[in-house]
Image (cartoon, rainbow, N blue to C red; front, side, top):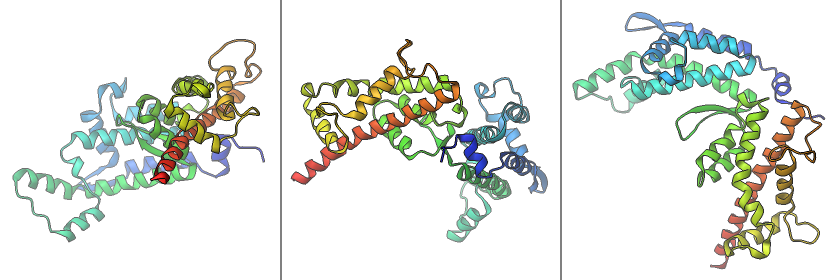
Length: 325
């Protein structure tokens, strides 16, 4: 069976992105009552956008409605749906971080748990004001929970997830347990590269060959010292020699048992795969854009494998230390 590309995969799952965006719009515009006046979730976001959304994020868009409309017109299908979700999620985070009331809002179910637990009684005027606001806005949070449920449904159906980066930004990426693990490994030494590992899978990078190339080059820079060092095993430092010896137990060596094949092949991918050099010896010269993107995706997967291989070497080294005790 031929491996499906991203869009074929979504289509085969019978996921209707247009239907989902229509449901989102309906939830945003569905009316409910707060303190005896009619409102909706869109009104909450519209007000929050005006008060709390940073100018640099607004760009040229003065209102929530204008920003939403531009997203709706500029994107299509799943990209439209996820861009809307990212925007709303980011806006909600800004509101709850800057509004002293909103950060305390709870759903009606959560409010019942609080009431059943202690029968909380505010002690100060400020606490009483906040608590009165919290109790009034449970309908709003129930509506927002509906929106989150649609997001979870869409992510689950399309094998994506919403993650929060260290800088606070929330982005939707394809689920990839290896990418998540590698990102955590890289975060110990280079947070920018850690973020790029996840960014590679961002839905907006589907078809963005240039950005994928930039990310791969950055990851190649991270791996370069290891790839170069392991080419000369006789000159390894004591720490690297231990890792190298452990890797030999789990990764294949070449015929004369001097090089780890996976590392050697990845170096070749970087050097002759249309990333670092521009000459007539590159393997990608006869590829069209679609083929080139698939090739970059394979290099990315191989990069994750090698980084995880390095981590495996460290783990085996630690295991053998523990076994000696």
